[in-house]
Length: 303
Ligand SMILES: O=C(CO)[C@H](O)[C@H](O)COP(=O)(O)O
Image (cartoon, rainbow, N blue to C red; front, side, top):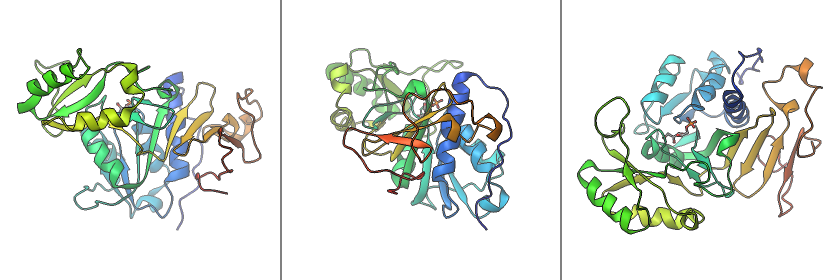
């Protein structure tokens, strides 16, 4: 039996930012979590609960023979509370699709991740997936990384090596790199893997070439993983304030899904669409890029 058509109950009123997160998450789930997908990676952060909410709404039948792989404590809880089957990447090193949040995404779909200190497991699940999809609100959609997320690049380090790595980071261009301290505990944040996190801000010139920076940081002995995800996501979905969704694809296309096509808009509301910054095409959304990319269908496959 196929994925059930999801009824769009009018959801509770949310703040604009929360509504944008939900919009991005629901649109991405509707397009990328298909009947044939049986192993699904679930990321971390405040957008991911909406991902799980939408997957649960596909119904018991759709989810009964699926297994869900978490990226940490939070997503494990979401999976368990959603009555979904919990699995581990040990058992399922190949994942059909992983959906995750991000702290910031640049125009080339590079992302900063690790604001929640989960980026080691997040990167493993992103890499293990045939398709990795990022979901976020409009504030995360940037030209260059480090524009809105200014805390620095999250770097997971072996506790034994943290002082040495900090010294290395100060020497290679991040003088303000610092150990992330816990809020309601004396001492550092400890990741789900028992490691420490360093936040390392770098100047814009480094952030413009995140792949080079990533390779440099990964070479430091004691670094376990770096919260720069380069060339990994197939697409990033950003929920906008006006109820539309901007989708950036890995090949450079930028798609605008109008409010009219949103899973959140009940049919009777579909005519009072606000003017869209980009024209609506015949597929209820428009695609544009400077390379004149071909039209795509709702899954991002060539139409
Ligand atoms: O990388 C992450 C955790 O390590 C999160 O995905 C990232 O921090 C985004 O979270 P949010 O959706 O709450 O902004």
